[in-house]
Image (cartoon, rainbow, N blue to C red; front, top):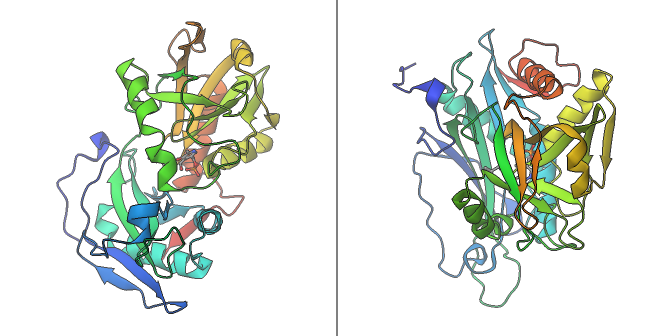
Length: 341
Ligand code: PLP
Ligand code: COI
């Protein structure tokens, strides 16, 4: 395999071109053959529903190179299942789990030389996306869909990696509506978060910690990641209909249970942050990004979670266990990894 001149240890979370992507089209009521493409362009009708009415859903998952040289894809079936749920959420054609699985494995194998080496801390980010491609000027669902999976090697999402980052609460912004599309992974949710995210960055914060859009009383999620806090030694994470059900968060909850740490998935009020001894943003891209300070823009109050700017002991244990499972260094007791043969 041709060696790549990539500084794996300092990869940003960005787009790095790879060799191939895979595609499949839904037309005349059925999914077609899987195509392998070397082009990073798509040609489509200018009246495609994805362009006018936002029929777009996506996923994010990762492949890792283990110490044993094996390639492991983390929780592939769970991402397939969430993509099915997102499709139903905005009336798109669901992708059969077997097709999703086959295409993910295929695109990873085809781009094997882009899987970062063991020990680099980087991974191969897998980005499946589905778009409505048939034309419509009336507001209605497409009859034809394109499913594409691209991959790109990535480093940490927040530039601090597993180091403390600061986030803020800004009540003037909502990402989603109370009974809206927050629990689906649709492009529109991210478009709706851009102004708030930009405002937070301008103020020096890496992300917005959104509150529930109905009452602004409870914590929701943290930019493109879920949120957890350690309160009274328990792993506490918001329960909400307006957040994305994070597969990373679910994994961390399971690891807590395995390690005898109590998990509470419930409404969490803003003032409970006063009692948090650790906090973090968690997700595929974010992994665990420990939170240093949470600034409340409306009250001016700072919740200083990590005065020493160091990740706390529970976050560190969870991070290490999760990494070890994904790299094949700790038994995969829950069957989360798909080993690519
Ligand atoms: N919340 C949002 C809005 C996200 O975009 C993501 C990323 O996928 C997450 C949470 C974390 O979900 P997961 O752990 O499944 O990647
Ligand atoms: C992920 O963590 O996979 C995401 O989709 C977050 C992303 C929007 C960068």
